[in-house]
Image (cartoon, rainbow, N blue to C red; front, side, top):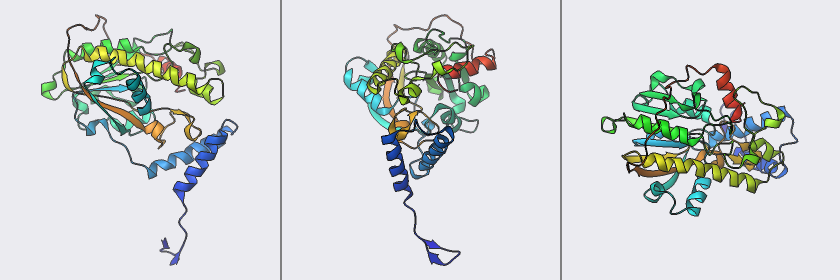
Length: 332
C-alpha cells in the first residue's frame, strides 16, 4: 500500500486474519471471564467485520404477496427441522428452500434498516407484528396498516407472545387484503425466539410488570455461563420453531396467495466467536444467514380467525408495559 502523504510504502495489516484469529481464541477460551468493558470492546471489534462482509438484502428487494418472519431463526435450524419432518407441513413440501443474508443480526436494527416512509412497498404493507420493538422503531403511518399483536395478547405464563395469536390477527388482516392491487401482508411471529414454549426448564418467563433480575437471565446467558447443555438448548430452539411452523401451516391454509416467502430477521449465536444470542451488527453467518422459503398459500376453508378485536397500534400499551415485554424476551 502506498502512503500518499509520506510517499512511502507501508505494510497493510491483515484485518481479516486478525479478526479470525482473535475470534477463534475467544471461541476456544470463552469470554465469560472478561470484564464488562472488555466484552464491550470485543463486541465492537467483531462488529467491524461487517465492513468486510456482504451488506445483506432487504425483504423489499424481492417480490412477494405474503411474507412471514420467524423471529431469530437460523437457516441451519430451519433446514434441520425440514429434514426431520419431510411430510409434516404442506406449505414446505410445495415450496423451494434457499437462504439469504439478512440486513442485520438483531430485530431492532433490522426494523430500522428495513422500514421507513420512503421505502418502496412499505406503504402497501399490512404488518402484523409480534415483536415489541415495533413500539420503538415503527410508525403506523408508514404502513397500510400496523397491527401490534403483542400489545393486547401477551401470554403471562410463558412470558412471550404465542404464535396462535399472531395467526389469528394475520387471518383477520388477510380478509381485507387486495393482492391484485399490490397490497402485501407481512406477518412477524415471535418464535423461535426464546422463551421456549415447551422447554420451560430452559426459559424463565417474566411478568409484564416485572423487571430483570439475576434469576431471570435468558437462555443464551445461562448457556454462556455453563448452566445449560448446548444440545438441550438446540432441542428447545427446534421445538420453538416447530411451534411457529404449526401456526404458519394454519395461516397458509387460510389464505390464497401465489407468492409467499417464509424467512427470518436474524439468527442466533450458540457460542460461535464467543457470542450468544443475537447482539447487534455482527457479520457472522450464524446471525445473518436466514432461511428463504418460496411457497404459496392455499385456502382450504378450514381455518378462520377468532372474533377477538385486535388493536391496530400499541397506543394503549404503556411505556412500562413495552419495556417489561422487551425484558421478557431478553432484550433488556
